[in-house]
Length: 63
Image (cartoon, rainbow, N blue to C red):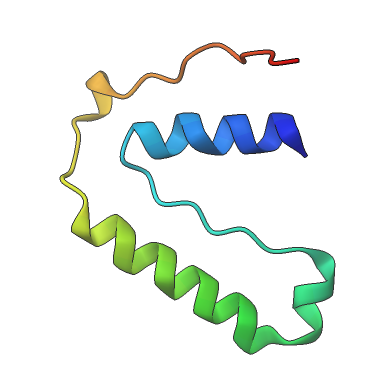
């Protein structure tokens, strides 16, 4: 879970919105829809970056 969070942080640093849910959330599809909509809203607010300028840092290991 920790490495996944680090990958999300790297994505967010490029201006990409991230929606997260678990299998349990799929029992209530409205929850997943709300999370995706929220990510879309946040993504629309951030300034667009050119594709060439978006680079992800190598996977970082934190202990």
